[in-house]
Image (cartoon, rainbow, N blue to C red; front, side, top):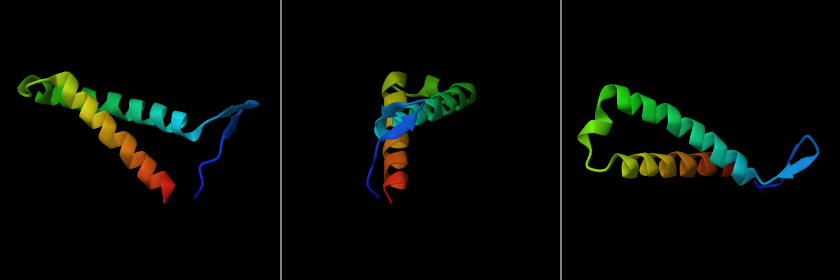
Length: 67
């Protein structure tokens, strides 16, 4: 599949920007789950964990959409 621009109300948007927003929203949900379960208190650097989760979610979205 080739990535083509998406038309949102007569504005062409790159598909990666939509994937970035989707990954950000998914990371917010996962961060809330991790905070409520106490995982963020047990890791050495919580911001690094959240960044790693964001990277995993974004790369997973790109791989799924790219297939």
